[in-house]
Length: 416
Ligand SMILES: Cc1cc2nc3c(=O)[nH]c(=O)nc-3n(C[C@H](O)[C@H](O)[C@H](O)COP(=O)(O)OP(=O)(O)OC[C@H]3O[C@@H](n4cnc5c(N)ncnc54)[C@H](O)[C@@H]3O)c2cc1C
Image 1 (cartoon, rainbow, N blue to C red):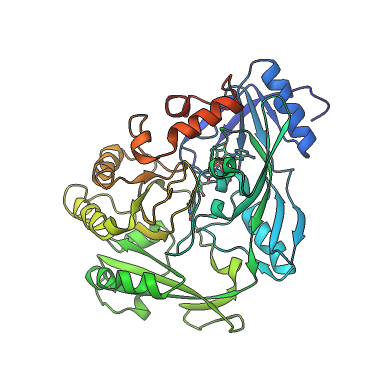
Image 2: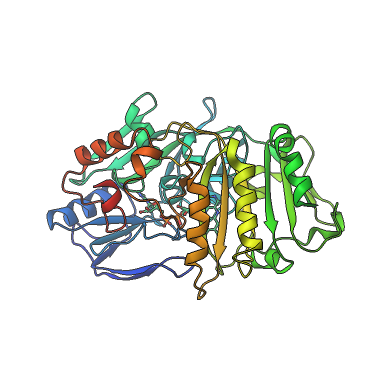
């Protein structure tokens, strides 16, 4: 980027290839000043502005016909405060790079999700979460942030400013995030244990496993092929059940003082926290996910499973089931609500929409909220019922961006 001239545009597509668009201009600013200059130049021309992370959302959350910013050159650690256990990070930094840098300072992220290749701003903006009944989503670790506004000015939000709660999960609607300050913790190793159990036994132990482990999650696989679709390990050698179908691939992770090791059969591992969280996925699925109030989790899962065993027998991607504690983010999927997340997937090229609509019909009965980065059917009528501070969020968005430069066609109906 040189000066405030906007460069040429081009075609963009997401990781899995179900979203693409052509932007009139594209820019890769390498500093906050360059972000500000690009945003101001675009809004002066009346253009929309969106930022892309690493394109791991399944929904049109990045799309724009105006200016598309990639912050991949605006990456790295700005400052580490070892005493307060806080780190300030440029918004384009990949989550995995944050973890690796923290390890050098004897620190760790409090929790992470299933992959670590997202840009920090991309992950936090949609409410990306890991699993753990007492652990909030990743954005709940934000104690400060810097947001570039439509005129190129920078809004600084610190702990104690109520607008920080709105901005933690804000989908790029309140400005382009240039930096975050995160609360982190002393470095820890995690021991991960995976095994297989049958569905009934898994549900019976649901409350106990969630309460007694820092992290507990499972995949329910309706048929043997399911686990290959998500690259899950074959846990039959550490199995409580000999059945090859309708099983749960179970996982717990706990902080340990043990030194790193991998048990010979591979189903127990110890490593630095950020080396344990990520698992491998290939881009062969389109995912829907909702946050379900924790009290309804088991019932909702049973209904989704029945649907897959009866009406949609060809839908064989695993169901992933995780736990996330409530937080204060105004449009966070976990707003003031301890939740489980239930996700299902369809295969690219397959007409899975009736299946996803049926899953939506089940989960919405329980007041479930969408993961903004995954497929969902949430509409404007749902919003005030799901998010008590929805109108406050809209009012703040309008105050910061009255002309709606940061809206796109996907978000205009929900947040204009
Ligand atoms: C294989 C795979 C595994 C996943 N695992 C998990 C998981 O374990 N847990 C979970 O919750 N989700 C998971 N997700 C979903 C994923 O974490 C989210 O969709 C996340 O938002 C993607 O991050 P990204 O960097 O790719 O951002 P993108 O998808 O590129 O963008 C997401 C949003 O962030 C906005 N944005 C990006 N940068 C900025 C910025 N600087 N300022 C303002 N707005 C910005 C974008 O405009 C967009 O609205 C997974 C997705 C995939 C494909």
